[in-house]
Length: 481
Ligand code: NAP
Image (cartoon, rainbow, N blue to C red; front, side, top):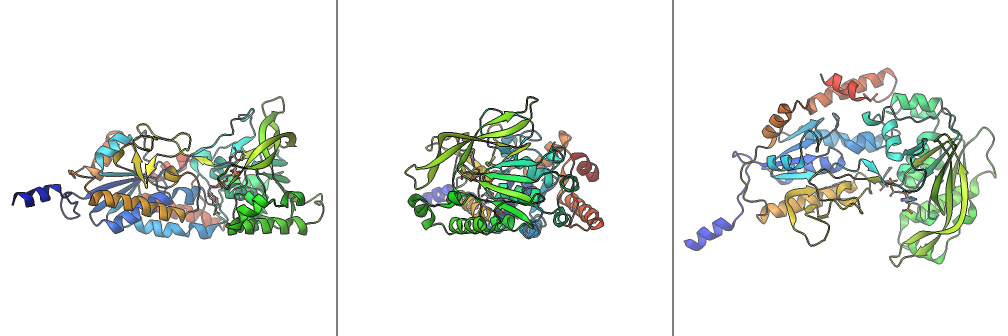
């Protein structure tokens, strides 16, 4: 009898959907990582009540603010995410900022499980002289600008007085931006591009865009579909130096097991040989520059960028099978009026969150947050992470599906192994809403988002577009009133 009682005590106390003690889960961030986590938690745990909070009044994170306007098929996933929000055990609360509306310790007191999936809302820096000159922009901000993110509505992007743009980096974000800058605006006019961006692009003087990579064609970070799209822009001259396309044995070795990279190389080779020798005077131009790393930015004497000083690079093996770029001491300038740094996004920590500043991620083991970066530290009970904050800023939307699966599996294991006990009731949603009300935070529920959605579609239909986004904080919050 005593043994049985001991065994009962050792078993984790169960959460129940019918009792007064559901498993209270808060997901911070309503991008793909947040929504996949919420969906999987609801499916896997009948006792889970899931609240999703986001600092914006609008949901869907990167799908709304990151995916290019001319990629509507990628945005279809919002239908699936909307169904998650209609689940009887799920709620969305927009306009709630972790770190200012509510602190992380407060959130953890309110919920049994907190999953941080707020992505990467900052930028890697080059840390080279001149980086603060005007005319130099982060890719994230440019993307937010053309996608109608309210934080970048007023980004000063002087397209009217710019003829040459240098984009640093050759990942898919760089290619998205090059495409938006060079594509005929008549083709963009029927997308959900923000009206202010379309108007600026219609008046642009941009004739030439450089895409600069510190390594070679065999290492270009973009994927074939995105490359094909940019190469296929109507009446565009594409400049690629054939000498850059010569592969070394080390390149061949790298390419051997990488089908995507091989395809990218093939497309670049084809483009290099199929173009006329020089652009016509009325033609837009896209130049791929390989084996160059930014050394510093040059100033026009009035604080505006006038050129990028690049150092030629050579590739060296570093033992990992991946070649790295090293400077050769030879330099070259590319004159331009605008630079866009597309070298990767960066996550930012909130107070009280362990953070690996070097890697730009939250230290974690399969989504379980660790107390520090030592690799041997204890786990922060009830705190999990998913998406770019967990693994760094790489991967497509579907990558977050697998990432969420892993984090939810860890949560489930922790529940099964009693790590989340004692499962005392927590205030959850009621406590959150009470606290936010006490602080006069104007919470935007999913039903209000649906009204914004209808309004944006209505505004869009007037312009023959799928939607016209409300692109300022005032517009969004006034509409919520
Ligand atoms: P990314 O793919 O990691 O590309 C970053 C680029 O910046 C690379 O060319 C990298 O060169 C370069 N870079 C990094 N640090 C540098 C430095 N200090 N100096 C010079 N160059 C530097 O990142 P991303 O383009 O921001 O994209 C993020 C993720 O979103 C990627 O996984 C991407 O595929 C995905 N995405 C997908 C789509 C799509 O599917 N349509 C669209 C947009 C984004 P190295 O290779 O030499 O490091």
